[in-house]
Image 1 (cartoon, rainbow, N blue to C red):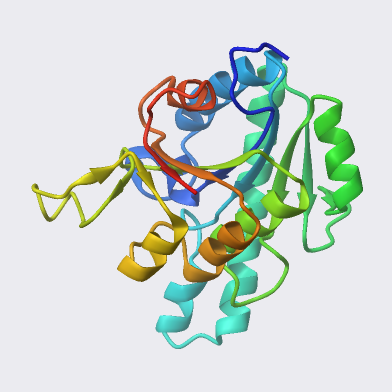
Image 2 (image 1 turned 60 degrees about the vertical axis):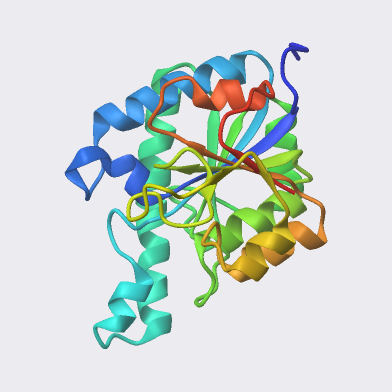
Length: 238
């Protein structure tokens, strides 16, 4: 691998909303295509990449349960939404010359492989992007927790959490113009301050297993590569 990169194997956590672009729902083909173009560059440079994708652009389990739907049922619908996003990503990746595999935590053999840890690692070693769909396969767990769990299982060097802001702030930068951005912050500080970087389960899992995380702005082109090269893009949580 090119030695300009600080991390060899990484897990990229994408929200479903990131694929929706400005339309706010569904899948924006232009956004997915631009993302695939950025990812193609780092994969061709030899970075091993796993992707966990959310489903909030199609359906949110929490929103469904807030409207009176059974929480487990709502979460299963959300998991199926992540599979749609994963297939859209796979299509875009392969149009950019990236070999990829979708592995689903819910068995769907016609459209994906089952999630098998050793097989996922083998795909990564062969230079394929592994797109991890359907969360953990369990209700009550978010895709953030999925990202933390898979990061530990796949022994990645860091989790990259793609957001619409350029890092972690001590308050909501949209509501508070005086909010201060952190370059570095500990997982313990994130938990004790109640900062909504990831949910507490995901944060604790990363902390207990010493997996660092980079929180960065996905909307700025080139940020994925810059972050992987160790440039001060976003906030490092460790």
